[in-house]
Image 1 (cartoon, helix red, strand yellow):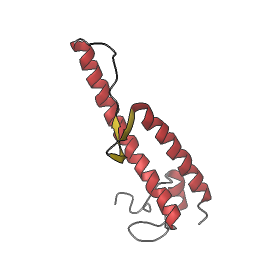
Image 2: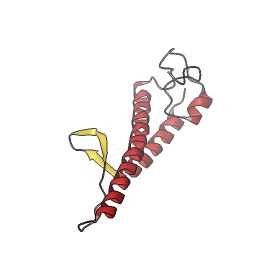
Image 3: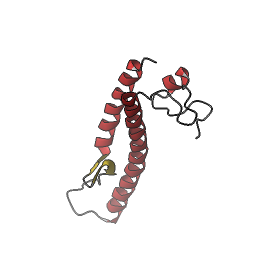
Image 4: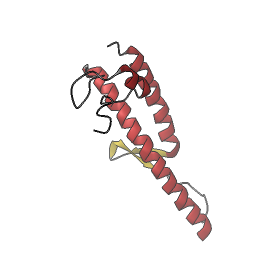
Length: 117
């Protein structure tokens, strides 16, 4: 399988995800593979309603960040598989992953049959 097409797509998605992650979070200094949401700064002492809004905003960003981080790690794993020569091989059976599946999700690690594995 020629992986150049998928390498380009995954590299582009990685850059997009990194940019999105940086808008709402930062890398955890204690674990560079982990991201943490940034609190919104007020610059002044907030009243109770403002504080509640800030907490809600932070919780929303934490949830969004988690989804982005999961996808980011899936993309990194796919790029590693390309590097190792195992890209496009089902993690369950070792058989080739359908090209249509890889087109739909270039970070897929299983074939259609084992999509939930």
